[in-house]
Length: 269
Image 1 (cartoon, rainbow, N blue to C red):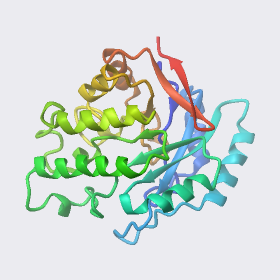
Image 2: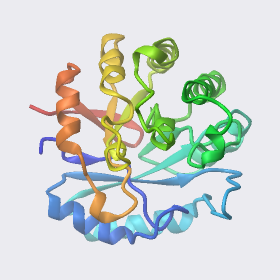
Image 3: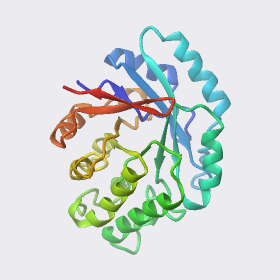
Image 4: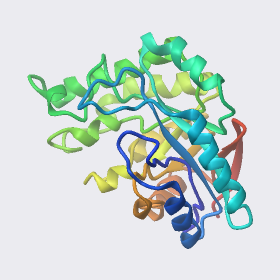
């Protein structure tokens, strides 16, 4: 495996994971990874199923800093966060991110106009095309007002939760939206993530699809991180062999890691 850094990982500090961070570190060492970045959730005003997605940042930094010191001779541990973006949250998110020295910040769309695509209600009463279009439009709205992140996470995340999965989805059909998103990210100096969790959800491709990754490169995009979106240690770096092929076929000769919010480009050949 030529990708040796996983930059999208969740643990018990996220409302949807119970994993002990030290288990994840041990698994990463077992896999031979050189670095990992924890990116537990901060989603303000998440209202579903009484799940709390507010990150306890002081405890988070204390725990991960202790692990950094304990395992410093075996693996580099970085401390990041995945922020759920909605336009009305811009000021709160900005204050939250600036309050702590994160190495890396993912900006993601988990809620679309306060609806979560994870739940079937988001898709009810409309076609997949309509549901996907609303998702991409919401990203464009987010980018108009907020950019305190390093990469945008799993750009076509919404596809994971369609009853039809990616049967009714292709880059070509939504190219106008996706291209505009990519152009805006590039203009802001932001990157994208290629996320392998889609394979675990039964999709044929990662998020985003390979055509979007290739288009990002064609448009001049350079910053691309790789993440498993693991919520348990056993899923760490899953699907990275397939991601490697997507990167190479898209023209990338490297992937990106971050420390102190600064990108470093790691060769993959």
